[in-house]
Length: 200
Image (cartoon, rainbow, N blue to C red; front, side, top):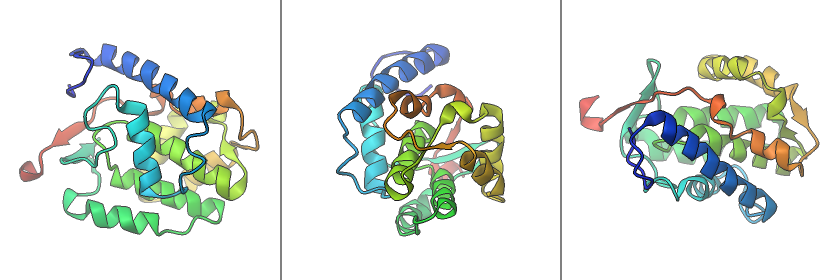
C-alpha cells in the first residue's frame, strides 16, 4: 500500500477514491484551461498534470520517484539514468503522429512517478496531439485490453500502439467526455512492485 493523505489502507478503496478525486481534478484542469500556458511535450507539463491530479491524495504528487520500479518483470528507467532520460525525452521531436507516440512510449518507459503515471501521461499525450495536430485520442474507442497489451509490448515494437491510437483519433478536442475518459483506472494494471534502489 502506498502512503496516502486519505489514510486508506485498503487497495480497492484507495483505487476508487483515487479515481473519483483525480477525475474531479481533471475536470477542473479541462474546464479552466489550465494547460493552455504549458509547453506540450515537456516534463514540466507532465509534472504539473501529475501534481494537480494527485496532490490531495499523495505527498509525492508532482515529484520524481526516489525508488526503482518494475511491473510484470519489466523494469522502468533506473533512478541512475532517470533525469537524463527525462531530458532526452523532452528533446524528442513531436511534429508528426509517429514522433508523438514514440515520445509517449519513451515517457512510459521512464515512468517518472511512484503512481499515477498512466493517467497523467494520457492527458500529457492528448495535450501534445491537440497542440501539434489539432486532434486527441477518443479513449472510448480504444479497447482497454488491446491498449494494455500494446503498451506492454511498445518498448520492443511500437507499431501496435501507434495503429491502435491512430484509428481512435478525433478532432473533438474540446469535448469534456473525450478528455475525461483517458483517466479511467481501468486503463492500467493494478499491482506495481516497488523496489528501493539499493535492493536492485
